Length: 219
Image (tube, rainbow, N blue to C red; front, top):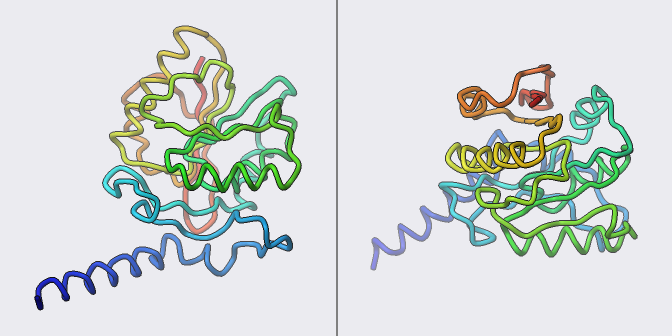
């Protein structure tokens, strides 16, 4: 009985520590407060909060708007370009991307609860579905990548999942050869990208909260 009680409290304290870990506490204090209470782009969501395996999924936190704008401002974006936010969470990064001249800004998210929140957010903002869609799916198996010129990752998952996702990217480039940019923020698993030999590093940029940002290009 005592062991179960300790285990419960240990689990609760462990989750609290992860929720307020140095990698995410800034989001609690510096996330923009929404004027519209019906919108929900902020907050830290642990994988287990939404039924995901913490061994493969990373806590969902909003990208820094300032750092993301610095990253996007460094690109030449054509009105034919389309971007996919891989691990899009509630859609906070997508909202920033919609201010740029992308033909489409889409998201891919595994947690169905977060997909639902993101879709509600963009519906309430009045964004046309032809310009913005949030796909429910696993990056390791999601193959519908041929239309995208840019992929954005805010370190959303483990190295194993990234390797599987990059195999899907490689297959897409064989089907549809094209220039493809990979925008990697909080770039933790760079070795997996380098080993694949598909992308070359174009640029490094300083990110918010000491999170490195890298721009890769294929073809």
